[in-house]
Image (cartoon, rainbow, N blue to C red; front, side, top):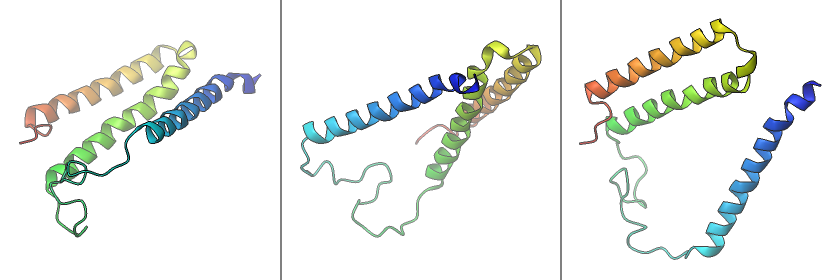
Length: 119
């Protein structure tokens, strides 16, 4: 009985992995694999892609990475909560509401402080 509860998650994982393999394979087969001047130009970091890897990055890159990790961890808390949603009682709803409220307040604070601005 317990194994049947995990069949949906296993199906989800198998479909996701299969879709990722198909999309990656198709992009490799269909796309032109020729490097041009646009591909080898400096992208997000502003450094040449084939230069010394020990150049200093600006603090903004680390800030964006940390913010991404913080808000990405939200999904790891929301997914199990959403899977067991029909068995959760009011304390479960309340605790998730408080979690999302704190997360939203933190996001609004970062927005107000300009941490998400890229100048």
